[in-house]
Image (cartoon, rainbow, N blue to C red; front, top):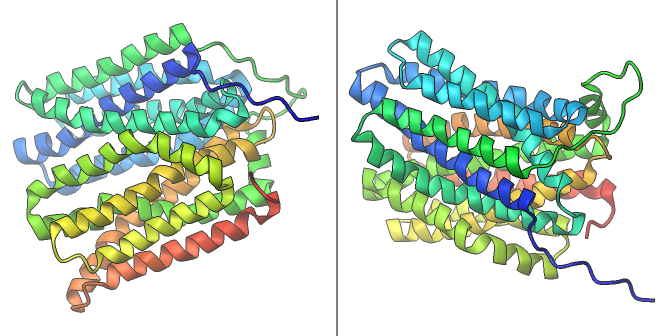
Length: 399
């Protein structure tokens, strides 16, 4: 007897709400974050290092809290945490508009980071909860497309609002999260987590994730990928500016985000039909590594953009595949904890990438070996791909 075909993927109001909110969150974030450096360094004459500290502390706050946000979502359900995170980020971004001292800006940034830490992993848990297992890859792909669209629209809106003033831009960014709050309050159902044994800790899910050998290896190896994924903001941007001047950043980011908006969903559908999940992830990381290696030989800006196309094809496959595998590895009732634990790879890999990217570029220039950073990054990517094959072998054949 043949099994009945899976129902077609038709997004529900809850799923559409999560896609729309992702666009709003990314758009609001990229509306104001790029303007912080412009306003406080170029406009007010602050030291660039002081603003760097502020942005770094926000990221560390968010990534650190994300680990626990996922565990709390397993305890009380994701919806209250997402809604609370939206409100707290509204306050954080709005407060930035009134910052006139380093201490106030730092406090506002920490508040914004706390908001992000509360809604990040719970949002992934909510996506998992409202989506059938066979549709999760497509759903996470739509989420990623919405985020990339927000990454395109946010800076454009921020550039327009910068003429009105940073305070206005910050208040707009905060207001976007109020809209996200309202959308999710109306569309996202309350998800009651399963009952826990009496006396069970809210952090038990993190302990289970840590003891899961396959998932622990998966998270550790993914640090290598996130080291590579940050290079669009570091080594790739520096190369683009060296080849075509500061104006090159617009086409660079526009191409990367635009490709994700246009191609991510159909590309994932194509891959799903022909390649199992684990080989697809490994292949995507190899694409990213190869693209970075080729960038070392790009002598013109169009050649670099051609490499960025290959790089983007890889990155747009990694996110939905990694999220799908995380949801698949998580035991029932521990999805939030697993998504929270997986944030460690982004936090560690992203921090190392920001540091090592610039360090490698400087070393290549100092040693007169311009291909050094790119070949090193390619080697990291190939090792990461082999590591993923090793880390996921305990799953058997992942279809």
